[in-house]
Amino acid sequence: MAPDGYEESLQEFLVTALYARIGEPGTLTGEGKTARFELKKSLGGGSCEAEGALDYVLPSGRSLSHKNDILISLPRKKYVAVELKWVSSRTSAFKARAYDMLHLKQAFGQKLRGIMVYLRTGQGGLSADQAQAISYPFDVFFGIENQDPQNPAVWVPILDRIEGEIQARE
Image (cartoon, rainbow, N blue to C red; front, side):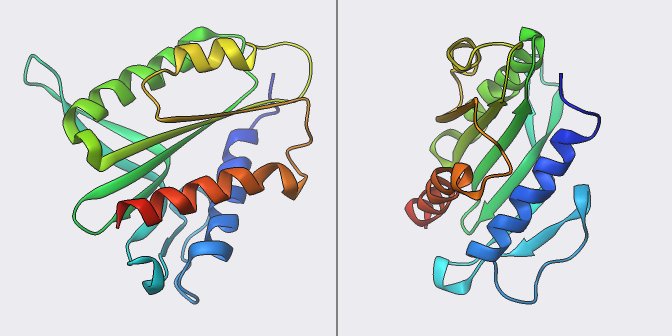
């Protein structure tokens, strides 16, 4: 199991790393779940925020809102949604996120790219293969197993992919 607050600290870490890489200098505000910044103009602009919400409508007509761990909003109502999950032995945690992503993809279509990042640094929890199978509605899945999440090199492929998704969405 993850220590209390670990997913939130990962969220804050990733927002800070994204700001250093794709953020317009001087635009970072808030911290933790209220952190947000503007994207570099050279990347086409937009914003990045922790706990960014997107709404979708169920077949019954009822509207639901999903708070993404990190939401990047781009011009022309295009989005990159990032979910972070630390060691979980419950499939329900992945199923709930997959359910929301499935409905968000139906609502936004090609204007939304979903990225799931699963960290499993030791024994216990679902394997990355099982977590990825459940997370099938996400466009991109990163399974980080048996690596130190505090090692910056672990995050480089993730940061590269997020930046690539932003550039592809312009």
